[in-house]
Length: 391
Ligand SMILES: [Zn+2]
Ligand SMILES: [Zn+2]
Image (cartoon, rainbow, N blue to C red; front, top):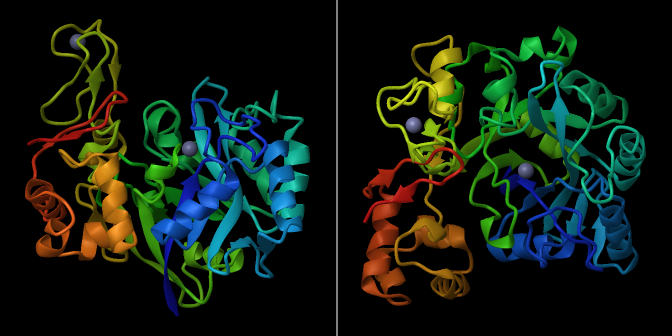
C-alpha cells in the first residue's frame, strides 16, 4: 500500500480559453493550472468540483486530445504521470423548508460526467456559468448521482449557510432515506471543524471524514488534505479508501486548526464581531434582536448526541497552519520557501528552524516553527472572517 496526499475539493474558475465558470475566482484558475499547482505542491489526487460546466468538459477533452493528460483505466485524469484529477461537481440543493446545502459528487470517467452534466442541464438554470446552483433537494441529487454511476458526499457539512447540519437538519436521516444514507461513504468536515468535533455525532460512525481545501485560488490548494493509503491514485482506489475497504484507509487528516476557520464561533452581524464565551452562543449579549451567524462549534453543541468525541476508529487529525496565515510571511516569502524546499508541506512539517532561517528572516522562521508546535495564540474566526494568529 502507498501513501498519497489527497485534496478532494478544488474549484476551477475559467476554461483555458478564458470562459468564466465560477464568479470571484482568479483568472489563472484553470483545469491545467490546478493540475500544475498540485504537481508543484506534491498533492497526488485533486478532486476538481466544477467539471460539469460544458466549457470545462470541452477544455478537458482538448487537453486529452493534445496528449497533456490521459484518462486512467481505473478512473480519473492523469497529469505528468503522477497527479490524478478526479472529475467532480459541487452542487447546491434546497430542501422544502428553504434551507440550502452543498454536496460533492465524483464520477469515474469523462463519459460518466458528461452524461451527468447533460442530465443536470434540466435542473440547473445556467450550467455554463453557474454549475453550482440546482433546483433539486439533497435526496433528488443523491438519486441522480447514483443513477449516473457517481459517488455522493455532503460538503463542509457544518457550515452555517450552505450545509446540511449547519442549517437544514439535526440528522442526515431527515434529508436522505435509509438506503441512500447507507450509500454515502464520507462527509467533508469543512475548515471550521475537525474529527474530534464531528465524532460527537454517533450517526456518522460508519462514515469517513475528509478534510479538503475548498480552494478558490491556486495558493489555497492543499491548505487541508488527507493521507490516503491505497495501491494507486485511480478513482476506484479513492472510493475504496472512502469506504475503508480491502485494507485501504485514510491514515491522517491535515487541516486548519478549526479556530482559524471562517465559521468556527457565532458572530453578531450588527456588532460586527465574534461572540466569545461558553458554547452554544445563539444570541448576541447586546441585544436579542441582533442577527447572529451561528458558529460550527456552537451548532454542534446543539445537535451532538455524545458528550465526548469517539475517536477510537478515527485517524489522527493534525492541525496545520498554512504559510499565508503566519504573521509577517507574505506571498514572495512563500514562493521563496516553496522553491527552496520543494513544497509547502515540507516547510510546514519537515524543515528545521535552522534550515528555514537560512532562506528567510529569523523572526519568520521562528513563527513558522511556533505555529507548527501550536504555540501561537489564535483569535478565533466567525461570521465569514478567518481566525488570526496573534503576534
Ligand atoms: Zn466549494
Ligand atoms: Zn450584537
